[in-house]
Length: 264
Image 1 (cartoon, rainbow, N blue to C red):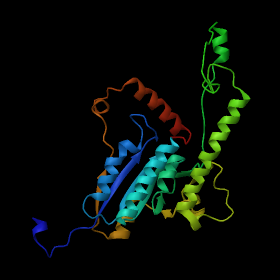
Image 2 (image 1 turned 120 degrees about the horizontal axis):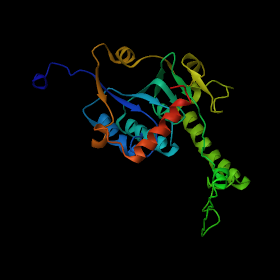
Image 3 (image 1 turned 135 degrees about the vertical axis):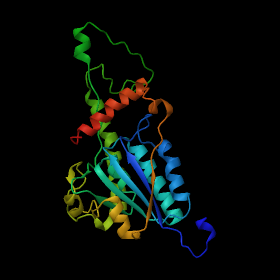
Image 4 (image 1 turned 90 degrees about the vertical axis):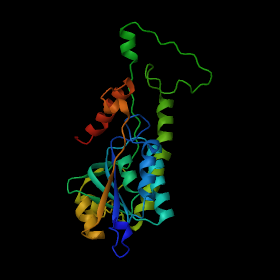
């Protein structure tokens, strides 16, 4: 009935979107396809005063990080809506890429921030196979088709190619951070060596704007009566029932390895 009474002002609303977990195209990961409906709805439903993102991610895919961040910026610019990011445990690597899509970044005193770098990780099993008398037979059309084969000894030319790929990805990440953080970044600081910082140290370097938590900071910015509307990523039926498929189990192991880098 409230909308029928013209002299009663509508409460100021701020959608709060949670982006939690590793970033990638897997069924349990943060991906552009998975979070797009939630983000689009938050920016489009009603007339929000702002959109806030609660970020808790150790990183993952550079492409998915870029796609999600680009979607946030496109909607923010089109609708002229400010965006705020709040870091919980960690916004590292791709997680920090997402945070930089916001107009300002707020962290807890113990939040882990940074890791502006790129990594390529794999395993090698040639000696194990040799020990068990297993012969690897690979036939390719194209000399690069067996690139970085984990069942063969590592080759110098493969390592060189990996570094050639990582370089441009790292530069894309750096360009994104510089574009979004600009003059806020501390002059002369070595920020792009994949190091990480805690809370206030990240603020001092310009990687974040201050210490702050979602509700009190948004009340400070938009008034005590601001209405926070939570948005979360929907899980599939099998995930809700706990019926994890093989790729989900593997994804869980990989995600735990990412979190473990930060002691979480």
